[in-house]
Image: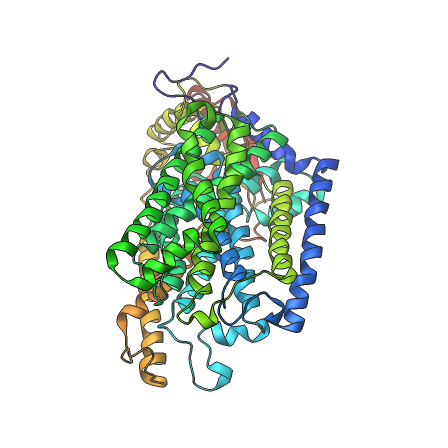
Length: 454
Length: 176
């Protein structure tokens, strides 16, 4: 029996005590992996191994293995890159932006969402690195090292170079933010463990003892990191959108891109968080921590960002007409009615229409409907990037060079590889790391209800 | 065993009892070594008389270093060491330098601040922490009092004050 605040619903249900929080979350790290985990993990490793054939082929033979041609010089690779980077945005939004806004419900989902961010950025990085063709030389092309040790430097005018800095900073800062949060929880596992586990988690916990002074600094660090990560996360997808927006290709040359890409990133990221968390909460029986309230709030974020994305699509169309630029107008008419009409209308259906279903309370508080729609949203967001990239390129200025893009088996294989990698990392995380931030959940346990459960 | 450090610890169940206890213990003239909690207790710094952390200043200074390094690097490479005209822009196109400058600023500010945090809090993988009670990282708050620092007061008296302040247990703990 839990007596709760008279004004708001508790963030954690089920009358949990502090010890229950520790136990419910640590026990998944402490118990032996069960057969379901092994099956899921081995499947991911299998997918990873299968996909790695495509990666090796692409490095060995060169990127001629891909479906690109001289008209469509960017397609699956950059689509997948932008898609994965976008997915990553939800983690930082939950951990940083919601921290600044004092949204306490973030505490039970931030750990897994940040993990997802880190893994998604790793998956994203695969694509541009492979597209360099010779990744072992890419260092000279991507980082400010003297080119082939002459004195020619990288070009700081290029948004592609800005991307290198944005993505690597984003990855490093997210990793540090995530790890700082993990330290107190590793200490919890250390203090419950014996033998080898005590040594490993002892090293991982960096000697954390929970002193008031340390907590004070910890909170200070979290707040400043959140303050730094908030503009950072907005800058990352802004810069990704600059890859297109600073060019003069009709369909890409648009000032609306930065906010539109950021909204789309949060939209797809929250969908991916929901996909993962709905499964995790079910398998790990964490329904009291990741409650229906959490799912509903995330669905509301999906409605908002989905609507922003929808307005952006319509605005683009309007501006193409209003600009009076024929090439721009053609690019948009061609998107909707040309040979890639099916991709455009898949995008429109999945991204603009389907999230509007969440206005209905029954749908946004249904686990099954949310799970299904979260997958639909990510399919839609993949098509959005595909539509922007491929339909803007495939009919270029000379009709004689118009072409279609067909993905090769290698293109598909590398995409499969990224999924294998993502889920392999996620299953390792779910087994060996506490999936919920225990310390921060304990901190909101009392403030979110009038009575403390002893 | 001369160099051993001896502590008296009070174990508290609830954060509000803990905060009241801190006031009571401090006003009775006992110096508190440190208070350990499983989660950040809101406002505990004021009760213990801790000053605000200076980490934001560290972050700001590292950020300043980041801006300086990033701009210096880009102006040196593009404008000075190997000047090139790209896309009709001049050799030192400041607007083009802003994104990279921003990223490097954030990177150095974050890593610098976290580095200072690690060093000042003595966090490192090979650290040998003084664990007063294994339940601190679970559900108990522990107030530790260094006996040597409170030699003016009798041990029994300290224990009594801790008990009366609401501690559910009073223990002794020694470290080498």
